[in-house]
Length: 190
Image 1 (cartoon, one colour):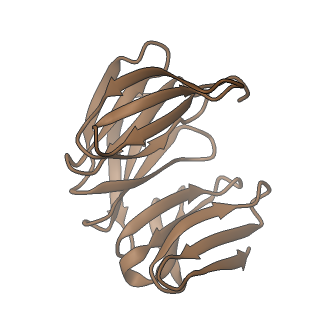
Image 2 (cartoon, one colour):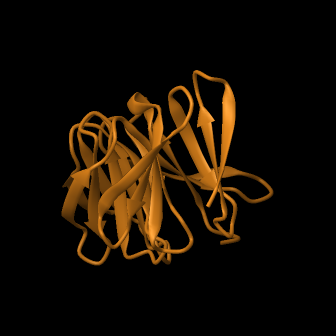
């Protein structure tokens, strides 16, 4: 929302920066998190910030109000990708080396399940319909389609050479995927 802070994971310094993105951008706070922070997610109302820590195999949960660490959760060997479900009730974390997706319950801050994904999850995106999510699978040159209710990989589609970035249009009817070694953007309609 407008006026909300922006959160930035700083891989080299093991910190989460809290930024004021207003007319005069500035650093509001610096919060120590785990080693190798990579992805950031603010589910639901944005009261908590979830940070993947690639070198620790953890996710740090930070209170957005006071910057206190609320929990540190195990999430595989190399948690990289992160997103919240469309309803904000869960956070999904992609373990790059383990090729799994971990599901964290936002209300309890606990990992409640995990399931196999295709190779090398790098980006996760929950689609606005609340039923599906997508994951770029870097080592399999594909995107995976994930069932939110089923908590499983429903299928994959070829996505160029080493797909990395992932986004959709606001209504969720088009998906854009960057192919990092193919130097292209692929567009999928659904």
